Amino acid sequence: MPAQLTMTQHNDPVDQRLPRRIDAYRNREHILDAAAATLRINRGASLEEIIADTGLGRTTVYRHFPNRAALIDALVTRLLDAVRGLLDRARPAEPPFDAALARMTETAMTAGTQAWDLLSLATDDILASSPPVTNIVDAARALMQLGVDEGRLRSDVPLDWHVEAYFALTAAAVKFPNSRQAGAAWRTVQDVFLHGLEASPNAAELRG
Image 1 (spheres, rainbow, N blue to C red):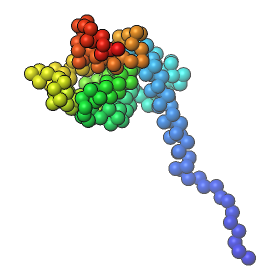
Image 2: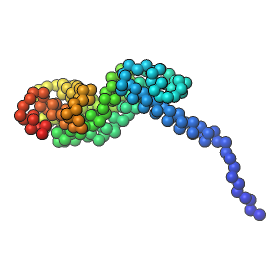
Image 3: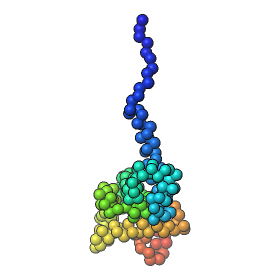
Image 4: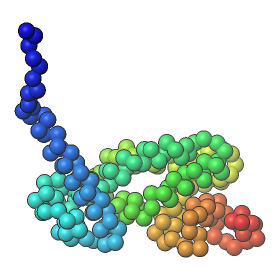
């Protein structure tokens, strides 16, 4: 008589740990989401204020983030990890320059206020050691070099001037949104970067 197959219950420790790991991951992401929302409204929010907004217990939050600095660094790291994908889509060194500038600027604007605020809260150590930050600067330099090579940007000005001016203008557009340009702020950034702030019929035509 053939042996019958029977269902047995395995007390595999890996199987038992998996649900806990999933819960821990969900809790961590929930804490980061809540912290981002809180810091967007109040950049000086304390860890205790952030914990209150998570709806989770203090022990749960402290298990993931022992202090505010660790939480901020985790937020910035998560943001910077997303930058890689954004830069891939922007293709800043792919000509023509005007199209590359449009892609890069639209990509930068999608990061939104949260991104710039979080980067401003980041510690110097995490920014200095983060490849995505280097990649952002390198991407901007490649974009500006393309503009110089095509004769769209001045060659008698150091490339870093172009880069710094571009970043400053983009950050200003995110920090001080213009309701009249809602949904097309990146076009305004592009226009001002290329043509300055001087009012002129030519600039009006380009905006139109």
